[in-house]
Length: 80
Image 1 (tube, rainbow, N blue to C red):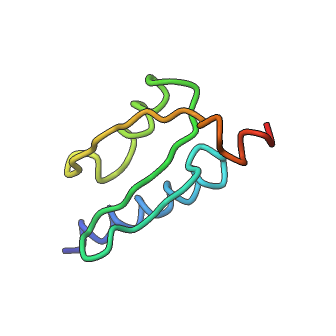
Image 2: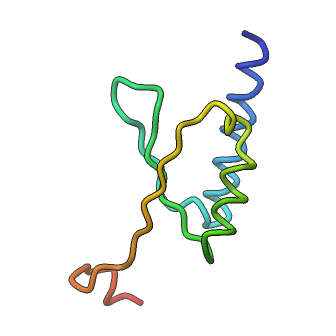
Image 3: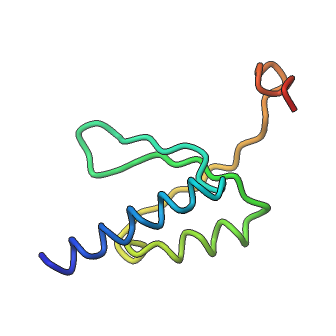
């Protein structure tokens, strides 16, 4: 289990660094599972792919990507 704990610790550190850098915009835990939903703000697919492949747990993850766009009725849209 030491290897798993080391990988989880490295994953946490990278996740927090991505959040501080503004690339990791949101992070939510999925209740009852070892899973999360993350929202990234990146320039494009290649940048996201690079980030995901850089995750220490990447080889063990089942990742599903859903591209999002700002909704015109969002209050946040009027702030931009």
